[in-house]
Image 1 (spheres, rainbow, N blue to C red):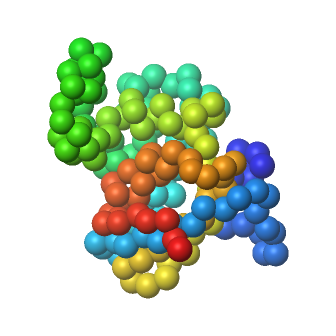
Image 2: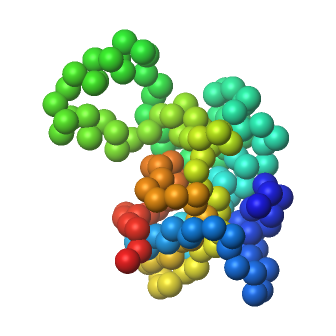
Amino acid sequence: MSKVDELKRIESGPPPGEKPLGLVAEFDVDCERNSIETLQGAKEVLLAALRQADTGGVTLEAWRNILPRWFVEKFAPEIAPEEAVRRRSLPMEERMQLAETWSLGAWVYWLKPTERQWEWWDAEVTSPHSLHVMVIVDAFPFPSGSLQWLFRCCGATSFELAE
């Protein structure tokens, strides 16, 4: 699939009758606010990000101007390499708490074409406070943290692999 096709699917869903090529990972998403607004926010961010010709070549400062301000404000500050080393020595519980909030640099790293292992397929509102999100993946498991963070920033309270 091409980036152009993915952008079209984000904007208006897949064409009627079209089936995804590859494996599909499906997520059930609970939202603290209106699920329509949560989905609209996620799409707004993805469209802004994926419209960049080279997501890997964009500077952090440029990302701060490309992405919606409300989204950028949700990120933790960037950390120095020394702090990353220090954090690796912390007990697992503390490391897990720190990992719950992403930095902008970490999030855009996972948007690079060489790192992003999912592609948007579709999403549907299933109730006023829930969504069903589908992405195409090459294999299971796959790194979905950046996708989870996106939806959490947009109002999701949980983002779980559908059974």
